[in-house]
Length: 231
Length: 45
Image (cartoon, rainbow over all chains, first blue to last red; front, side):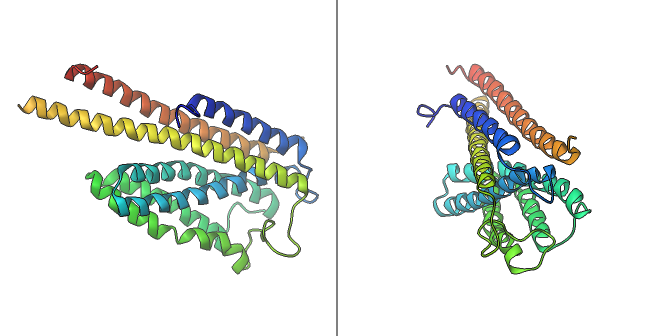
C-alpha cells in the first residue's frame, strides 16, 4: 500500500479533493431558497455525519475481527477508526448547532436524532477512555471490542430516527421517499464533499496505523531492554 | 454580507482537523525519537 499509494501522495490527493469540494459548495451549488447562505453548512454537516457512522461500522468490523482472530492489526484498526471517527462526530456536533441556531432559533433540542448522535459521540468517548484507563493492553482490547460491538446498535437507530419519529431535525432529503430530494448540483457538491472526507478519513487512519505500529515496536524494544538489563 | 454561522462552521471544522493532525504528528515524532534512542541503547541498526 505504501509503495502503490504513498502517504504524501495520499495527502496531496486529499487536499486537492477538499479544494474541489470547497469550490463546489461555494460556487457551484445553488443557494437554498428559504435558508440562504447558511444552508451551505449542510454539505460538511451531512458528510461528517456519514463518515462518523461509517467509522463506527469499521470499529464494529475491527472488534469482531479482533475477538475472532485475536490479531493486533484488527485491534489497531478499530482503535484508529474510533479516534478518527471521534473527530468527525465532534464536527457533526459543532456544525449542527451552528446551522440550527439561525434556522430553528435554538442551538440544541433533545429530539431523537440529536440525542442519538450525542449518544454516538459518547460511545466514541467511552471507547477511547476505556483504552486509556485499562492498563493491561490485551484486556483493554477485549473490553473495547465489546463496547465497539454493542455500541454499534446506536448507528442504525440514529440513521433511521428521522424516518421513524417526528423530530425537530429535518426529515431525510436523501433516500427519504416521495417528496424528498435535492437539486442535482447540490447532490454533486454533497457527494464530492463526502468523497473528500472519506479520503481524509483514510489518510488519518493510515497515520494512526503507523502510530500504532511504532507504539508496538517501542514496547517490544522496551521489553527487550528490560530483559537485557535484568541479565 | 458574510454569514457568521457559515464562517464559524467552516473555520471550526478546519481548526479541529488541523489540531488533530498536529496532535497525531507530535505523537509519531515522540515515538520515532524514543525508538531511535532504544535502538541506539540496544546497539541495533
